[in-house]
Length: 125
Image (cartoon, rainbow, N blue to C red; front, side):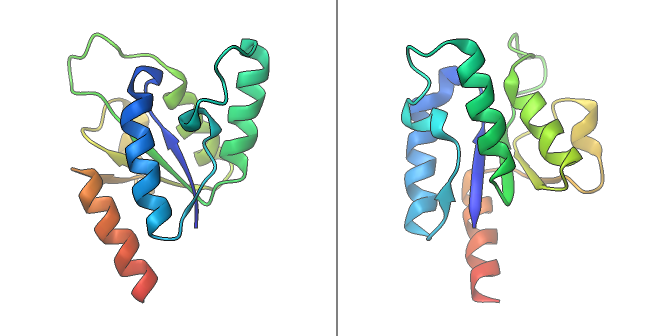
């Protein structure tokens, strides 16, 4: 399964750990930003790369921020919307942060471990 991880850029190091764990399950991570590919690149190139990375994914996993967080914006919301419009599965980890997280096709998980368990079950089935 090809997975795009969407999160605040400031959480990149945290995402590295999650990406490595998913790779251990046999998943391919399409989110090049997680491995630092965007550093030092023009924003236009980064946006194109992220868009193409989302398009290559089977699943977008978005890490939300707690209700009332000061950091409400971010590309992660756009990435989720693009994936939704393209018919790519969307899962969120954490609270439903904004209105579109309430769409019936978007699955919500409380923790990364819950996602790992779901992926492991899907692999067995």
